[in-house]
Amino acid sequence: MEHLEIERKFLVNSEAYKQQATSQSRIVQGFLNTNPDRTVRVRIKGDKGYLTVKGASNDSGTTRFEWETEIGAAEAANLIDLCEPGILEKVRFEVPFGKHMYEVDEFLGENKGLVLAEVELNHEDERFEKPDWLGEEVTGQIQYYNSQLSKRPYHKW
Image (cartoon, rainbow, N blue to C red; front, side, top):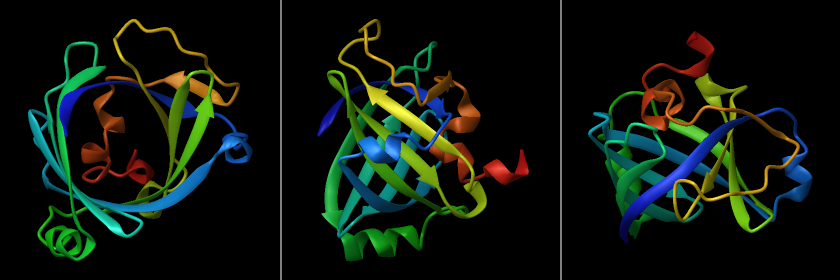
């Protein structure tokens, strides 16, 4: 699947999202390439694997090219072994709110304590409802990109 990914990213200020979540899954992911112009990610989510290529973000940090394909979990595990140092682990909660689905990532390991929410939009200036647990917006702040968290974990900030 290929498309432009348009999303906004926020810190989370409470655990209230957990009561509103419709699903949660554990994710393990690594990066074959963390260059912001062409990030290549390998992910295992549940029993499925994914290979994703993302392009550079636009000036506002909201939009970038994304291509993703499903691969076998065993293939993904083999590719994770080839990844750059800094494998990320997190629990993702899917939380419907208003007309959108928020993905809330609770990071584990060296990024424990960091909780980020993302909402994907159809266009950059699309209006969306913000739940009470949504904190400061960090869209476009590169230190919050997963590819950067793999190199400079949250606990080292």
